[in-house]
Image 1 (cartoon, rainbow, N blue to C red):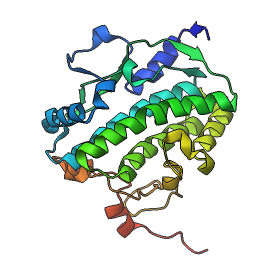
Image 2: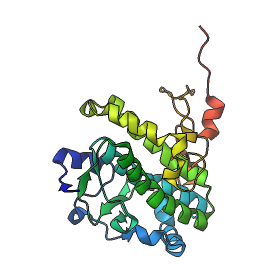
Image 3: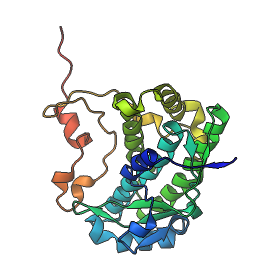
Image 4: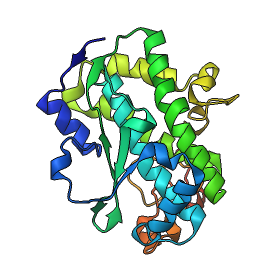
Length: 263
């Protein structure tokens, strides 16, 4: 397939999703090739080196935070497919994770050695191949490495990823500049949640993204409805953790959840 260019508007969208478009503008000199992190020894070293930046020396807590931040690579990949109709090469040997901070929090970016894109058709087979490329051949390998190093549950890691994917596809419904692509995005999202497509994510019998897609509910103290998490991401255990506690935290939401009024 022939390579095509990204427009300036598309690049701005991707930059907002932590995609690094110009390596010359990066101030950090700490770049890590993702392929290396699939090796447990190097993942262990990476997490240990980032304890202070992440705000915890607990391997389970840092492993969970790492996957919350790493989830944005899946957002970048799915945004390019569903909103731009384009695909990146997101092989682990083509992706770098780059240290960065925002408001004192560790917020890494992602840089591709080869950032060229090709057009992806609306054909279901092509889209399934790309989803498998992103999840089975990449994120699932990273999760396996994190799990072996930290003993963090895969259920927590998949929900850390899932919440950002749900967020991405909810953007399409509300953002005026994305009007017109919502039908294809809706089809893509449905495909991502199909129970019969669990194999796209790895050796799973059940789709790891579908299990967390529940109805949003009213929670006391929160204006908008929220989708309460089934697992805890441990953000509250970070330094200044209570300030970072998720609105959808099951520890608090399950206590404050209120039922719809009977009319």
